[in-house]
Length: 460
Image (cartoon, rainbow, N blue to C red; front, side):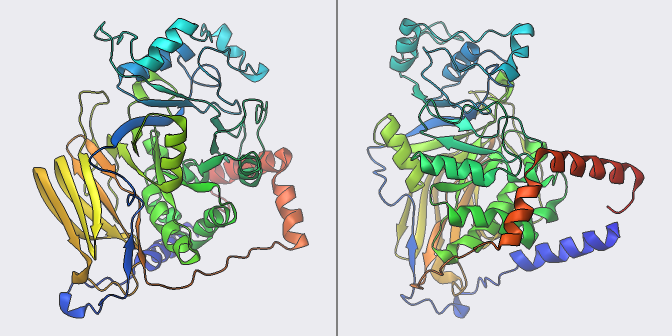
């Protein structure tokens, strides 16, 4: 039975990602029948800056193994411009205010972690850049933005329905326990209070681990696509997460969700979050936000428009979009990644001006369609008139060097089609089943049965 399921999963993965994309110019019949729409079209590459940000951070305020203050100063040392604490079930406040304390996490005090906020002077120095860098002992010279209103809206759950919400009022979503199968709860709460969100580490929820095929199972793709299509404020998913062993195939899930959602007019943004519970993971994954100023309003605009790049120091090899071998560099500010000086669209051409880059993988419809070698500094150009774009939905870029990878958002290939209308009205019976499966007792018994079945080899 196990072998049969694995065969079906592999076949399914091949079918969902196998969209013909001929690379022969003779096969192309593009004409002017499509337009490339980029999330970076409004970026002023000559004036705006790339601000390094991490929006998925934990401390001893929830289940992290480092104090609140130490995480702030570590991010400051690691050259972050933007930092948000998305504690489990606790909405972030300004760093000079006492964090919300939940009884569930009182064990952290017994473990020796304090939760003291910064003083007003320390907070102002961090924001202005006049605080000393803990490593060099000199003022950094540029401030770090405190992002309030962030929350990983699960509290403590068994079913791992993890959603990061942003720009929430500080008195909202401070919960002791989360909601099992609680994606709907979390996403609707963020939308109700005018925030924005993304789904965290979907592979962890699926329990894929080393099973690459699971992220291409149509049932799993449809599960996450449903939330993305029903909630406008849900911008996308974490395509990269610091817990790489659990989330190694989320980029493949991202591609599958793009193929599912784009016909309905929904671009799915790929986020990168360190999910740092300690300082050593803080610099593992992050984002570069293209903004004209360092402010909360500019950050939200960049997030909503997709004007940002994901970045990671580690990438697992896989059989679909690469890389061919596991890529890992030591964490730290002295491990420079590729720099994107501009990413522009000119007609049917995509042009990237890069520094410190080795090569670019151009990915469309879940597969690599071209590879551009770069000798440190140079131009990577993709001319889509050299491809059959008749079924192409998007192109995105993954830019590699020996220290990791930087990735762009999907640039949509607009053929002028009217977006499909998405409807997924659940029947009364489906609502009852969902309510049952959302009870903690159901989830507990389900996990118990799965554990027994796995140990005995029965039925799984």
